[in-house]
Structures are given as structure tokens and as C-alpha cells.
Image 1 (cartoon, rainbow, N blue to C red):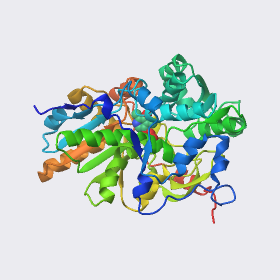
Image 2 (image 1 turned 90 degrees about the vertical axis):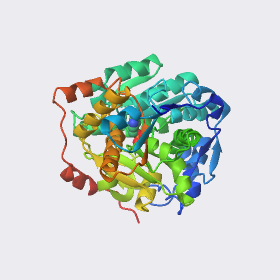
Image 3 (image 1 turned 120 degrees about the horizontal axis):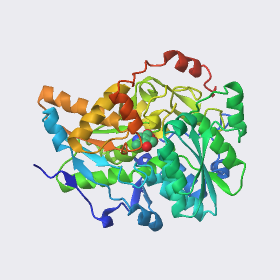
Image 4 (image 1 turned 90 degrees about the horizontal axis):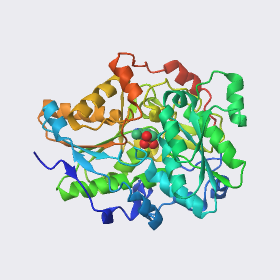
Length: 450
Ligand SMILES: *Cc1c(COP(=O)(O)O)cnc(C)c1O
């Protein structure tokens, strides 16, 4: 049996984050204000601290990780890289499958990699409260944890359907001292507007973002924190790929393919961007974002300026979008139910420098169960997506006889998602058709720019 677990030393936790902007062939598209003009950085000051705004706009290749942030990263970083040797045997593939495991963080996913620096920069700027949204509860619990570490109050607007489906994620946030509300609430104008139109609204990430942004913009002591999509979030997540590269280097490996689930794009950017640096320098490596067929932002969306939230409070970002008020079907991978995508990931996809595939829900759970039985770890429903795609790649290798090296990011464990596994086992999970009519209707309401 080859070495199956590749570890790094604490001293090898990255000292700098990698900024992909430095290696992109074209500069990133700027966010636009309501007037269709690029928004001045100061305009973001109502909800973000200066340090994060600078990172959002930065073209510097390397950005230092503050020592107090590295100190907290030590709780779970460096995270392990595994060779999925047993899975390879089950599949009978000549491919080598590696996975980086981010479920070792206290919150059980990659999200604390950015929650911790975001809380820290806000605390340094004298901010005392943060508002945020959460879908499945992964981001809310990551920020609750990070807030607790730096003595910040955290208020979480949790998408109602998840609030009801995942009560233990809520208890987890409360354990770390956060306040949690089922969104839409009647506490914000945005929430009241949605409820007036649809009193039975189950909520969406876009709606919860509107509520959190509205509250942060209206209070001086309060900022807003986002768990994905924005440039600085993807920047912080590059610790994943930087470590993975070093781990593979130690055993003389380099991937042919890198895969990750893609909701807003943060764990994909996190693992893939450090490899993009090599690709930009001429190396051959495929970077593939994996999304659900029911919310196929990259593979079926339109590349256009759109709002990040449902109500239209955020700046316009150029991204692949299904329309800002699109309501994705209630799939169990809650973290992948977002109408848009990271502008950086979108631009690289538009320029054909990265790839994307969409996979249906049932096939992802089938892959997740197969993975758990071979490797032991039970993947989060989101993470079942790259597991599916990695297995598909490995099976192609079985056909062709190629011994490719596949790397994927196992973004989190599924311990809070066993109700979804239950449904899968009892045959109650379904595949959703691509919601063509709902997307088409939502695309009619794209904001007009230029
Ligand atoms: C939130 C989440 C995702 C999707 O978000 P990205 O920003 O696209 O990474 C994927 N996996 C897990 C476990 C998550 O919590």
C-alpha cells in the first residue's frame, strides 16, 4: 500500500495568500454602482473594512497572512492530503486519486479559512458586530467560530428552508455565541418586501444576503461578511491549494486534473488558483468546477452584470448568473444553491482557462456513499459533487488505460447532513430537471448595463 496520508508541519502553514489576479491574462472586471459606473472603493466602506477592500482590489501576487490569523489556522491547518487508494481499488482504475480534506476545521468545512481573517480585519478596524447570511449553515457556523475567537458579535440570517432542515447547524452557531434568524425575517425592509410578495417564502441565499447587507449598511458598529464569491474570500482560501501543491511535491506528484465543488467559487478558487499560477506559466493542468445540474450557473448561465443578492442592494458584478431572483430547487447541497458565481472564476471560465461540469443530485449521493465506504470520511452533500466528478474521471482512465493523477477538494464532512443521506437511502431524493422556465423568467430581470 503506498503512503496514503501526506502531512505538513505547522511551520509550513502558508505565510502568504496567492492572488490569482497577478497571473490573469486580463484585469478583473470592476464592480459597478447603480449608475453603471465602476464604484469607488470608498463606497464599500459602509460594510467592509479598509484592509479587505484593498485585498478585493489588489493585483499583488502575494499577500501576507497576519500572524494572529496563522495562529488560529494552527487549530486545523495544515490540513491532510490523502491518496484515495482504497477508492482506486474499488474502481479498478489506473488513475491516482488524491484529495485535500478541509473537514478537519472546527466548523467542518473550508469556510473558516476566510471567516478567521475577515473577523480579524474587522476587529482591527474597530468593528464590533458582523452580519451575514448562511444557506446550509456552513458559513454561518464558520463566522460564528471566528467571531467568538476575536470577541465579535455575529448575527446570521439563515435561509428558512435550511433553518428548518438543519437545526443542529443553528445550535452550533449558538454554541459559538451567534444569533440566528430564519430568513426572510420581518426585521429588515428587504425581508418584509419578500414576505409581502410571498408569505410562505422558503428563503434563498440571495434574500438572506439582502437582509444582512441592509442591516450592516444601516449601523456604524456593524459590517457585513460574505462567505464566498468576492475576490478577498477566494484569496484567503488559497491556503488549500498552496498546501496541496507542497504536499504533492513531497511525494513527487503533480495533478493532471484538479476538481472542486462550485457554489460561489471559494473552495474551487482555493484549491485551483495556486495551480493556475503554473498553468499561466505554461504547465498543463485542467481545473474543473463541479456544480449541480439544478443550479448550473457556469454551464447554463449567462455571463453578465448582475446583483449578488435577490433584492438588488449589492454592487453589480460581472459573473455567470441564472438571474438574481432565481430560486433554485431545494437540493440538499445547500451551499451550491446560489444564482451567481465568483467574478474571478467566471472570467477565467469565460476565457476558457478553466472548465466546468454539472452533475445531478442522485449521482452525487451515490458517489458520496461509495467514497465513505472506501475511504471512511462521509462527505458533505456539496463535496459529493467533486467526488462524483473525480470518480467519472477515474473511470475514463479505466477505459483508456491512462494513469492520470486526479486531485479534488473534499470541502467538508457531512455529519450535519445525515438527514439528506437518510432520504437518499429511503429513495426519497430526486433529480431535478434543469429549471429552464424559472431561469428564463429571472434572466428577463437582469439589470440593464451600458
Ligand atoms: C459552502 C460550501 C461549498 C460551496 O461554496 P464555495 O464558495 O463554492 O466553496 C462547498 N462545500 C462545502 C462543504 C461548503 O460548506
